[in-house]
Length: 117
Length: 112
Image (cartoon, rainbow over all chains, first blue to last red):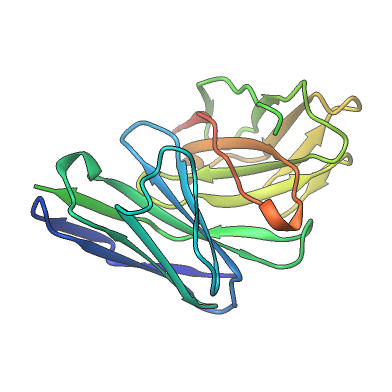
């Protein structure tokens, strides 16, 4: 089946620094990727939708200058958390869409746990 | 998109069927019902989806009522590894704006 990977799986960074998270579709090309954030004991919250070669579309309330998304190829999207603060500590999950709607499916990566100290 | 209502938690015995309900009374004719699950500290996993007819795959069965206002996900022989949060999502899937919005889900605990 379709596999989505994320790197790193865990990252600890100091407040004020930036951290980049990679999301890759390993055995398929994904024209659309999605980034979610999940706080403890809460559901996933969609942050942005990323189309290859285009600017990402951010959900309301998500700061685009803080969460930089780059989708430079059909197999790679990156999320950069700039000037991270402790409140940015969360579980970040990417997802990639494969197939032709409505039969397409959306596959999720294993997540990246970010801790900002 | 139609909102969904799921019980916050359920439990069942290992080896028994787990029946997870979902209400989506405002669903419209072109909206699909999707089910995903999330095991602790992992990304969500696709389970099944359907429009009108009941569906079955190697993981589960999806029963959609005739009026499509509710559905039930059935795990026929639950195992301990099925302990997870299960999300029912209804979604129109137009090409240009397909995205999954997650609700609070049902936390299923499978007891030994």
